[in-house]
Amino acid sequence: MFEARGENGLGGAYAALRLYAAARNTGRRLGQRLDTAIGDLLFAVTTAGEKDLITAACYSTTSHTRGDGRQTLFDWEQKWYARRLPPPPARILVPGAGWGREMAALRAQGYTVCGFDPVESSADLRPKETQFVRGDFREWVDAVAGSDMSSPLGRLCETPFDAVILGWSSLSHVLSGDLRLQIFETAAACAPDGPILASFWCRPDEQIPVRSQSRQRLIQLADRLAHLRGLSPDPTTDFVFSPTHGFGVYLTLEEFEGIAARLGREVYMETEPVPRVTLGRCAPVAESHTSKEIE
Image (cartoon, rainbow, N blue to C red; front, side, top):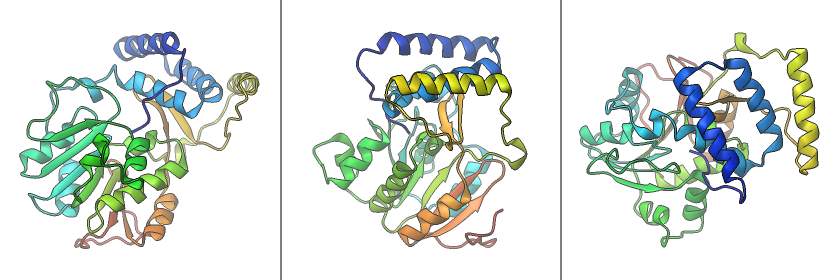
């Protein structure tokens, strides 16, 4: 879902962040304002690889990788998959699979399921009768583009899939728009005749953030610190930070329309209760959507 490879010499800082995330997730005593302040500071002064490490550190403290005992799909997922996926025993690839919740549920329905995630999870949690490897989106893109069948991800994708499901909201942890496009191009290469499904974060119009004067001053300070490291933060990135999820970005239908056009696919958008998109080669459903129709 994001790159878990990091920069050298920063292990202590990320260990401290992981402890903060664990404490914040348990007690939630420090409040949302502190999370926002930490996010603003870290977003400005870290590289892309360091942001991925931070997100991995946060995720490693939660049930996303440690497991919460749930091996079933949410109702919206079940209905979505029933409409959009080919029937079992189709081969399904789940990038950004976390500890494997979706994989376990799909395997129970008779699918052949493979997946990967950059964050290490307990072998005891991994779904039985599925194939799981450790890896991140960038490694997957590179392995498939370079036809590197010597790598675990290359071997995993050697045989075409019937569909690709990007693990729950994992796409929103990819901060680079260029990499998000490459992810969809790679998914299309892995499932040339099947659908690509992705859920993501989408900011409601009424939640457009308003920056207070104190937050603006903090951002200006963070920008000055970033320049000392030779970094230039992108002020247009609509990012969010939390100790549960690390860094993420809000995505828009317009981005998916552009990706679908580039891939020569149709896009089907659904917004409730979780924003999600399907890039077809999948049969239209009764309440068929076009790229301009939102359920």
